[in-house]
Image 1 (tube, rainbow, N blue to C red):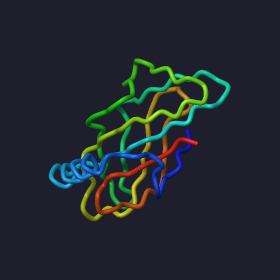
Image 2 (cartoon, rainbow, N blue to C red):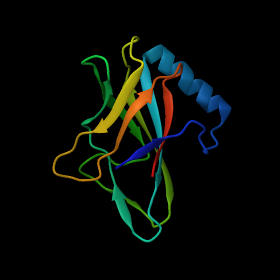
Image 3 (cartoon, rainbow, N blue to C red):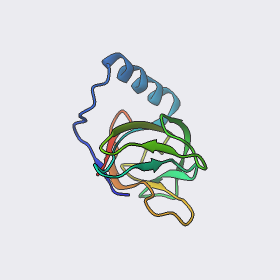
Length: 134
């Protein structure tokens, strides 16, 4: 499943919540991915995330693990998404190394097509990112 990195998210998030998340990511060394899933207009979908979803530093062997999910089911459960629905969920990962400048987001799952993946994400100062499934 291809993801597009949003440089200017279309989601309105209360500034106080963003400030709180930013403080938490700096204090706990976490990486937050906010994902917008755009369901096809003419088909019913089911989505989920596997616990074997990681962030990979492109310049080292480091792998950040998924530590928390919001608004999406974890394998083996499924979450229904209705045709044309714009659905938001959040994934929180353990921190990346300080030297990391570019990383990949990859869902590693067995025998299933449609895994979430975004490569070449350039690191920012907040470690909070907005991605959109095209």
